[in-house]
Length: 261
Ligand SMILES: Nc1ncnc2c1ncn2[C@@H]1O[C@H](COP(=O)(O)OP(=O)(O)OP(=O)(O)O)[C@@H](O)[C@H]1O
Image 1 (cartoon, protein in one colour):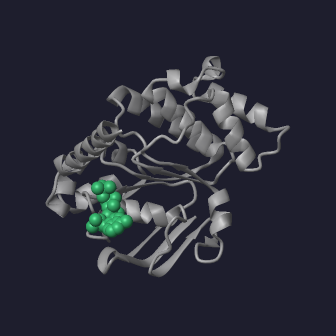
Image 2 (image 1 turned 45 degrees about the vertical axis):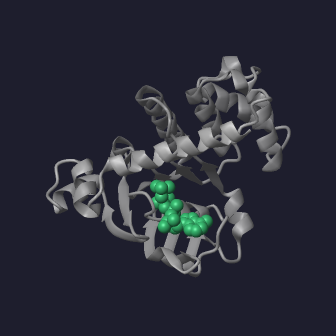
Image 3 (image 1 turned 120 degrees about the vertical axis):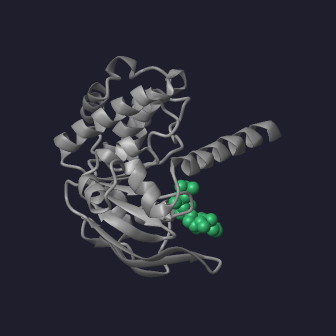
């Protein structure tokens, strides 16, 4: 379903990914963990076809990235950390435009949209402007949008950053329901180790390479660590605080942009 073989990529001669390989099986939920700068975003940008690797090969749903990027794009759903909803439109309108961009048959679109809005608990808010939604509601709407065109693979890049633990749990409940309903394959990056715990398998990245890959339980057992936190520290020499610093930096950057405006 997702195959990454010996992928390397550099920016201005500085390696971001270094001979990286892994496979994700159909229906699997696969987590990518790594300290800041490990290469997670670079890899996600390659998987969503925004970036071609310098070397190695990537295939998603059987299509090679090098020659079939358009087919890959139409068969994946993507959820980035930053919202890309149009807040001046209603929930329904946001989904409807996505359906049109992805060539969902116009006769089918209203029914699909209604079904998904009900599934994520937003049926009664479908004609409200998105600007009136909470952060958690917007994330749920984006999840509905990301699977509206019936992708087989869902890529989630730090999809729950900034949400409180309760809203995060709710999002993962919806994703679990969607996985069951649509037999989705899910690849996610996260800094939250409780999210990594629910993955079937995880890969830990460091300096652009996979340094460990297995089920969370087997990795803990293999390395003699009680928790994923301990395992992460043991393997990378870093802990979650490093990742949270990254988040803080992003918030500071956003504030700087607002001030300049
Ligand atoms: N557009 C770019 N230009 C130059 N260097 C880049 C670019 N994007 C990433 N890098 C570098 O590539 C390396 C991997 O970065 P990447 O953003 O993929 O890591 P990450 O694991 O996603 O980190 P984070 O958790 O902080 O988002 C880093 O050294 C980073 O500085």
